[in-house]
Length: 65
Image (cartoon, rainbow, N blue to C red; front, side, top):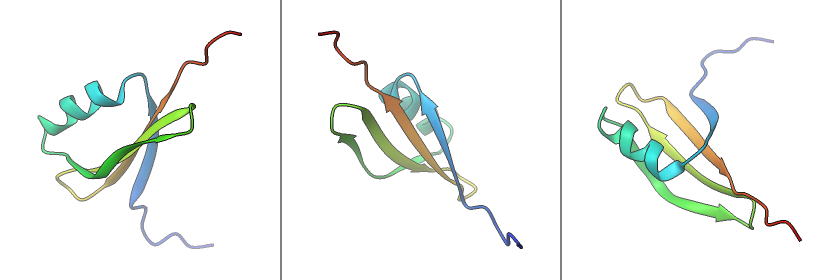
């Protein structure tokens, strides 16, 4: 198997909004919008100044029943 190029990476973060704000200060741009998957994750993609696509995932806390 030959991998020609890796163009994206996914990272779990504690707070998507805070992480976005910090990355934007370094030239990253939000691709699309932040979305929520059911009640489990908030997800988004950002593109860095070098073109790398970075997926961010924030796990939402489940309420105890």
